[in-house]
Length: 463
Image (cartoon, rainbow, N blue to C red; front, side, top):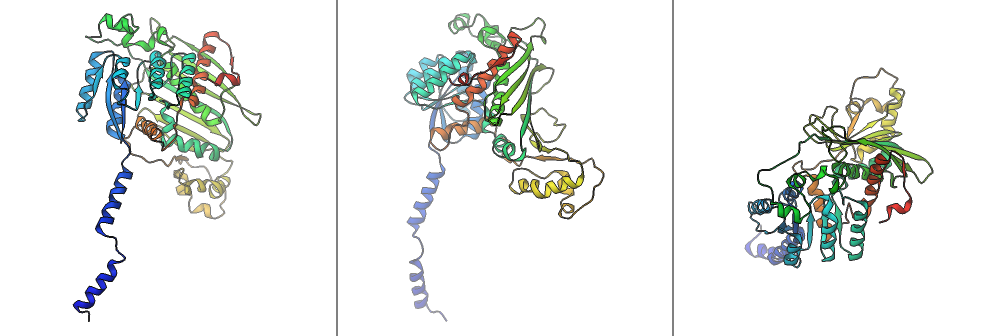
């Protein structure tokens, strides 16, 4: 029987091996500090549609970031930005001119997010870089290839980070697809296709636009140009450049080389009277691979009667077809937006043998989920089976990607930018890497204008 004396002795002996309360509290504090990222102060230049999307992503999903200042040439938008952040208990300083903002805030912030019209990206991005600030720039880089190259050189000269808003490069689904599915599951990639459709929106107008003297100061002749700058040639190629550059970037990512040539046709056929920029464009890219073979990719951009954004990409390999889409209009008639479809073999025997010997390994690695057909034949494929009649069962294998659906692609891309500033990650879409897609996109526009094939030289892709 244990008496009081023996109980105390056992307690004292056991306390030698137990951490003190001070040790436990200090370790908990260290863990809490490690889990909390270093706070980064940023400014936002431009608070239109894309600026508001950025603000939502920052406040709802991104940790360790604080918006200190916002700039917009339209006083209404600047005040709207201040009201938005005030609703999140954040006081921000508002400015009407980005240089005025930098003069007052450059020492108080570490990075700037630029979400202004494409034609002023170069001026604003380069100025921010020269002032020692890291920059996140909405896509596309700029309205001309020369300005895009200048931005790359400015980032290289200053040593500051320049992330371009090609959101798919930070998507969990696309990272899984291009790190594992394309190189290991498709076998040899033969052909790719991409499509982007946008809604036919009218020319926008507002009751109280900025004053004419303000618009003239910043390069706009009138309020119509200010509200609808994407459709006026003086401000760049417009929406077609943004969509084409973003998806051509995926072609370069898939094959690991820039295109060798492009042939494109397009027109201003949808609107009456026609608008200044292209409203449709079809492009065929040719890729020369290191092994001497060739591959092709097609891209289609169209303005159509559709009430939601619709974009997808397909990569056709010898063994399977990869379908990707982060912007897929509802309803999804053909199943999940991101999936792999195996090419059909001549008999069920070959199908089951391939699943048993190869495809199940991909499921076991967690890259894909089994298809309905795989689930049905899970037991049968363990034994030899004879040929049978094909059944109408889905052979789509969804990519095994799970994340909070409330978290937007914009948030993933911004988080990568912030982590790169802290030195925790590398940029997913640095300007130097994205520049190849700008060369490809401007090559397609040049081909459509000249009605001839445009060939690229290796030096074209060096800014």
